[in-house]
Length: 436
Image (cartoon, rainbow, N blue to C red; front, side, top):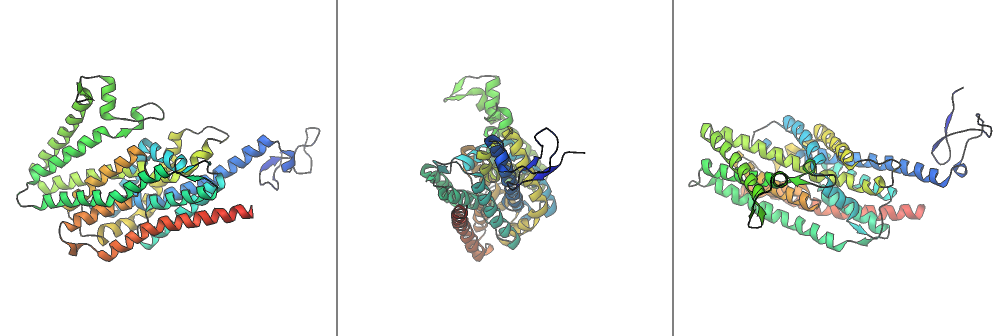
């Protein structure tokens, strides 16, 4: 007769041996388990529940900010279809999550609250509240700022646990959140204005912008180019292999590789623009969308996985962070494939009537800001980045092409998402503690 597995009042499956080593008829209870067995079982159950909340959050992010925003300008410029954009952004987001997701994940998991460790119950509650709010934004067509929502939720449950505010980290986060519309929108406006001038030539301006992008790509960090728990850029990895002379305090090899990649991108764009200016612009636009989608995965996956870090450190088995990041990236991918098209349509058509030039103007600062956030490990909203850039590029063509009402509702949604997530999480965990 096969051993029976039963569920005791602790909701932990255990076998029911008798005193002689055979099978008896009386189930085991919590009192029959050793303290270490109880802790391991409860940790496993809590980890599974929190992992479910994390996957739900990853799906919501993939369907919302990281899935919809990167290619929205390209769709608005008719450079790619909505469905194809959703498909590509899912794959690129998975790659970005795996290769660049560690910094923001560490911040969300360990740097938002001081003095306490987020408990399994608190992490699960915060994740589900944030994910539900983001999912509501997806279905009603308004972009809820995921970083605002998750940050507010985790601070809420952390303070309810008795933790102390991490004011220094809050200042860094708030500075980037406040500067994003100014820098992103202002840069997008300046680039769009330059591209629209009669005296500026696309054959010169587009390759120059491409050189700037190439310079950025050469210096963003990838986890595969360094040891475990670290990252290195293409320029840094090259300098490690072949050390060069110092140039203004910088390694000569790193400078050479950076300038070489910038020149390569500029040269390719010169050839493309000379053959067909419209086709050259579309290709540059799609490349920018791909870079922003990759950056979105690297930044946004941390919002879903960060709350899991305290649980993973006490898990019965060791789970490599790279495997966790890949799993979160899969959640982003599924969300992008199943829910992103609706939000792509909302962003590409409702905020501004975009052409290729203004779309390029929107994506370049978006890529730069996103990679800055990834480098410093600051959770940032891709909705805020891309919407600000779209609006900035729209103003370069006249205020009449931008929906002021939509802008107002969006800003209210950003602020409200943080306040609501914080309030619900703080109150929810406080009530949960009283009941427990």
